Length: 200
Image 1 (cartoon, helix red, strand yellow):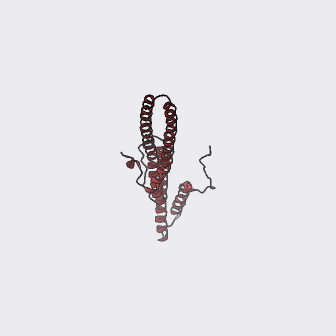
Image 2 (cartoon, rainbow, N blue to C red):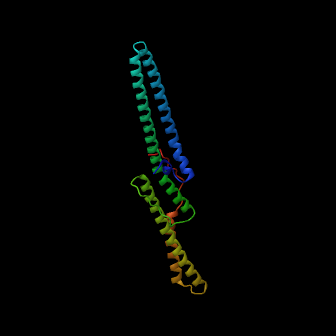
Image 3 (spheres, rainbow, N blue to C red):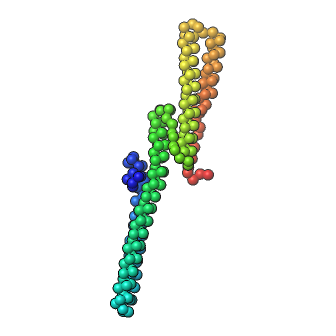
């Protein structure tokens, strides 16, 4: 997988990746340029000092310094590329599950209670996905019970409207209404409560 393959296909999440990678790459580039500049200054001073000794010594020293500069430049370039690849890989592993969870939440907002999250990893993102799946399962089960109870209440009400209303029907209706009320306790309203990331 090349560098471009590590970038997320979704534009918004790709922008999040680049917000991590670009500053890091710029910082490393500045470090490389600063190192080369310092080495260049040191090389000039050393060559200037050697100039007054002997031409042969100067030539030998200059050759060594040039080799050292080339080796240092190559090593720093390899380091920059390695760090960029690592940063892209890291952000890719972070952005991809976030995008998956975001899609699942969008589907839930649209009313798709059949959506489930599957993340092939062993970290906190998988725990969040499993917690979301449990929530959706509980929500779907509760709504299924509520719909079934409403259908039974509607059937009894229709029968009562056609004259089949007696004490047994009334008792059944009361029991169904009570069961529906207990089922809907899952959706009971509580005072708003905000959970912040710095809360313990």
